[in-house]
Image (cartoon, rainbow, N blue to C red):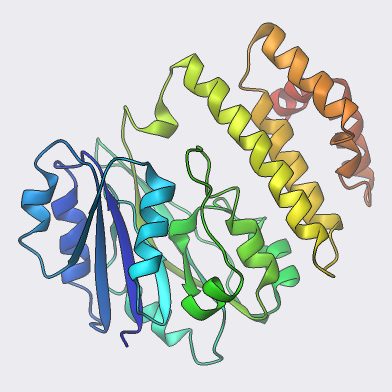
Length: 306
């Protein structure tokens, strides 16, 4: 059994897949398997992939979530890593993660930098921690720049399977609909300061799209993920206060991307469903934040940005 299973969905990424796979090939730690899920790609990506010693699974185009779920079913490694096919790893990423496995954690968090087409980079150096349970880890990780992105975690496969985790298929923002639960339910979480993941910022990607219809779908999917997370956390005996505040805050921020009546109607809907009531008020600043957000989420985030 390999230590790591690296799962890479592939769809129309012929300009990036070589750098992605090369970054795995050049890892200083070699105990891994690579599972490439061909999600019905229409370009020459798979011609490039076939030059590498990887396991290939072919399926009709079903989207990122379905491709990841397919990859997990094929995986045999002790830990799962999700690598997007237009991103790439630093050469010591697996080595550094492996060094953080001595206490047998369910989850290991590693850090990220953004890389731009003009070669500029933006690093996020986060404070590491060890031996935290899921609730403790969640409070620390939510202070990081990236929180729910699946590709900045190594997750124990047996834990993942025991909890019947899977990404919601047919939806955008699938990471938000799963990773908060993965962190919260974990018995042991470590976070390392090593910046091991290169997150490519490119125009035309799903998250960078300017299409307003896609924006409305993103917000609608985000809302459904919120509902799912809230119902799932109810089934546990964990302290839900901080978790519910986080997912509510994330949803309220997300609706600010809507326009006109769409924004007003969604804000009214969230008020009716008492989403704003989940926001923490344990400090004076949080009390003020909740008051402003209840009046106008857009006003709060406009003030915060300034």
